[in-house]
Length: 391
Ligand SMILES: Cc1ncc(COP(=O)(O)O)c(C=O)c1O
Figure (cartoon, rainbow, N blue to C red):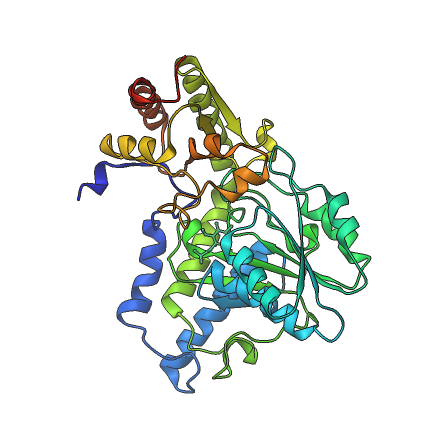
């Protein structure tokens, strides 16, 4: 394995753990093994450390510490928000609203709820991958109990008008959830500016550890627990807390808060450099997602290359020690075209020939130039062999 030489450009799938995060976690892995629920000294150390971590995360989100609940990651936070809200409010209504471009943690949970008797409306997106708030307004009904719209999309990086949508949802009795797994640490995320009742985040997308995340639950928001057992997390999420993970998550948040703005600017410039370089060298390519960079996550770009398959491009790039994705990591390996690209109206064959590049803190201009240099001949070679590309 030669990972140290790899040029990693798939930060939307996961990020390398920041060394400062690993250092912060180490004592809680090696020495501080106390159970935070116990009454003696070492348990108290762990309990205090968790509360400090909770306060750090709350401050970052503009929330109160007792509105932050630790989970095992984005998937659990999404499952809890949706199933918990649906169950707690089922007597009032059974209608849920979501979009066609959510992560599978939301899509599959919505399908699960549909099988349990809930009705789900999925609002469409435009060709840039952005929801029209008016479509959400039209979908709202008296029996709507929950609206879930992701903050930023994990495949094309499109940023949704969450604050505008929350203004509309506020006029109804529905709760509003956003999956902010991809946006936290990259663009401003403030629960009050966004106006949400529930917000999911995850550690491993922000240079923190895997298997830890959080759900923001606004005060007085009723949701049923997902996990039952001990009385942890104020009796709302049972299970001994992942102490090292929580410490690492808080450190990752702290680091993100320090560098978010300058890093966003740097990554935006790198993406611009890459896209300009690619367009100069490769014909018949187009951007998937908003043209306007301010409507897209800073380090993310998704584009389609006519006449070739995403999987072939990924394998050729891997041989050149570059790691990228053709869709979300969870769906890579299946040959179905991306549901996000299809929802944006991109034909299946072009969706198949799409790549997602997501840059991060460790990428440099040299990496970007290397990518353009190796990718242009890869495309030429694959197109020469392609039975469908004859330009
Ligand atoms: C938008 C979005 N939501 C949820 C998840 C799931 O998060 P986790 O991997 O922490 O379970 C991901 C991860 O790919 C994601 O991109």
